[in-house]
Image 1 (cartoon, rainbow, N blue to C red):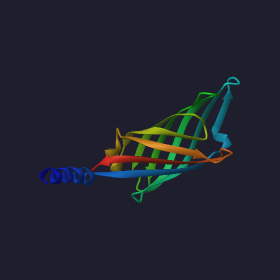
Image 2 (image 1 turned 90 degrees about the vertical axis):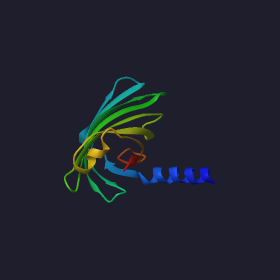
Image 3 (image 1 turned 120 degrees about the vertical axis):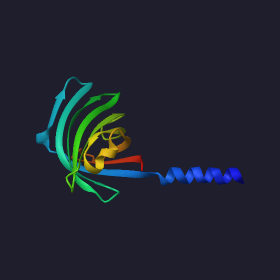
Image 4 (image 1 turned 180 degrees about the horizontal axis):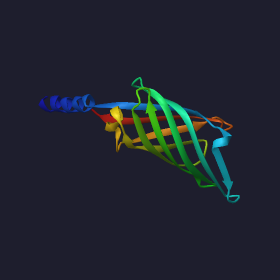
Length: 152
């Protein structure tokens, strides 16, 4: 009985001192901000930039500016790196880097690493989160959802 109480206390203390953070990003593609270089029949390289909006599960929201590139290698998948700067409705900012290695371009799972933040986002610095992305069939829009677990 004594051990059961100890285990329950440890379990509840971990849950009390951490919380889940979810970020959702909805974006549309603007052909003016996309450069495609078809290197060969096997490799396509793309550079992109854009501004979109985001919201989180804590009631915050704002804009996100990103630039990055990805390489699609036929039969091997997609390699992506994306640099983003976000600003919330109160003017606090954050920066993160997205990395993804996936089987195809249209869907995938990657990691986001928060690099720098101001205001409420300073506590996110150095945190790594998992994200998933999916595109509309024609690639004109995407939906990204990321989930992190932060210590309080």
